[in-house]
Length: 196
Image 1 (cartoon, rainbow, N blue to C red):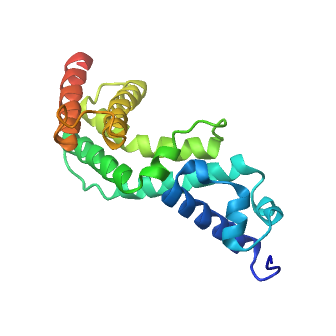
Image 2 (image 1 turned 30 degrees about the horizontal axis):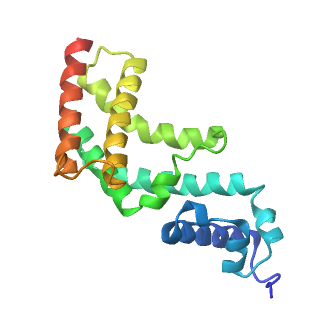
Image 3 (image 1 turned 90 degrees about the vertical axis):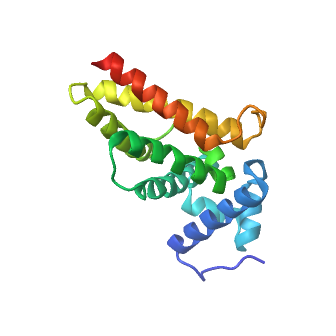
C-alpha cells in the first residue's frame, strides 16, 4: 500500500533519484521504469510525476547527478603542468567510468534534447581541459582550445568505452591507462606543433 503525506516533495524527489540510480547500478538502464521506482519507494506512480514532469525529466536529472559526480572526481586532479593535468584528468575519467559504469554509460544515451542547464554542467567539465590547452598555446583562441579539448576527449571517451565494454581485444591493449597516456601525449604534441 502506498504511503501518503510522510515525506515532503523534496524528500520524495530525493528518494526517486536514489531508487532510480540504484536500479541503474544494479540492473542497468533498461530495467528503469516509473512503476519499478514507485514500487521501490512505496509510493504511487502519480507521486513520481508530482516531482518530475515525465520519465525524460527524471532521466535528465539522473544524468545531471552523474555529471556532478564526475565533475567532483575531476576536481580532485591536483594542480600541475598542463600536459600532466590533462593526462591525470583522462586517468580520473577512466576510473570514474569503471567505478560507475552503468550511470556513466547512461549519460551518453541520447533520448531527448539536452536542456541548457544540463549543457552548462557538461561545459563546466570541459572548461578545465580547455583552460589547460589555452596554457599550452597562449596565443590560441578560445575556440581553438575548446575544439582541442573536445577532440581529445572524444578519443579518451572512445578508449574508455571500448575497454569497459570489452570491445577491444585484451591482447591489443594490455594497459588502458598507458593507451590513454599515449593518446594524450601524441595529441598534445601534434596540436601544439600545429597551433604555433
